[in-house]
Image (cartoon, rainbow, N blue to C red; front, side):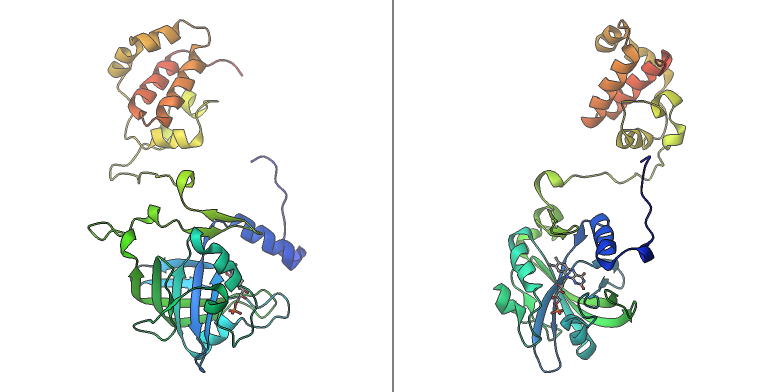
Amino acid sequence: MSESITFDPKQLSLRQLHGYLLGSVAPRPIALASTISRQGQVNLSPFSYFNVFSTNPPIMIFSPARRGTDNTFKHTFENVAEVPEVVINMVTYSMVEQVSLASSDYPRNINEFEKAGLNQVKSEKITPPRVAESPVAFECRVNQVIPLGQEWGAGNLIIAEVLLMHIHVKFLDDDQVLRTEKLDLAGRMGGAWYVRASGDALFQVSKPGKNLGMGIDQLPESVRQSGVLTGNSLAKLAGIGSLPSSKSVDLWEKEPEINKILERPDAFNKLHILAQEMILNHRLEPAFKTLMVADRISAPKP
Ligand SMILES: Cc1cc2nc3c(=O)[nH]c(=O)nc-3n(C[C@H](O)[C@H](O)[C@H](O)COP(=O)(O)O)c2cc1C
């Protein structure tokens, strides 16, 4: 990106800063946190300052900030200070409006399960109930609360350890592996924008193998400087361990499809377009050989 505007957080209003931070650190998962006061009043509120931070021990973190209106603490924060327990319920697209309703600033004695029309299920290890509609719910003990500041909008990190997990059976396969792609989770962006993790929004990226890829820096100059190949395509090629052998490129050059392109004056560009299509169709090896054929003829002058 050639042009950008630089902002100093200290020069911005709270509203502007909030907009830039939350609009760009996105999408964020949503924790629908169920807590309880010492008097036994149940509270349910969503938090998108949230993630999992450790597998062993299993640790999740979320952050109820000081209210931007009067700098007071949110009920969730007050509850965990009194009873250090929370159920973190995951949020699906089908419940996102109810979750938004649960974020309303109801008085402390109001149970947002009732306001949002969500059903309570008794927890097994802790006191706050979990949300029946959530596909996955984590019963957690709060290990630590870390205030991040005293001013309006300052977060309070709640570090919670997972004691029990409840996963709806329809999201587990026969080997009890979680089918994440089936959850239809909702996430939070900036402003009123949300994201739905399903359909075209889902895609897979294969993990780098044990054999190290050569890296983009080792690709031939003509490939690295291609005006056609995308950064993603370069990275896929660079995940391969070595360049195609010159013998395999000799043979590939003689393929009718390639040979025909080589007769054209714009052969270099056409070969790159063909290679890009092949990469998109997961045909990495022929794509690489096509690019090596192009490498043998000179690239057009810009
Ligand atoms: C999807 C969503 C995510 C939210 N994330 C946060 C958050 O991470 N931190 C926060 O302080 N408030 C967040 N809010 C606002 C709180 O849910 C809201 O202030 C709520 O009233 C707090 O409830 P409580 O006072 O009962 O704890 C979020 C609201 C929505 C709808």
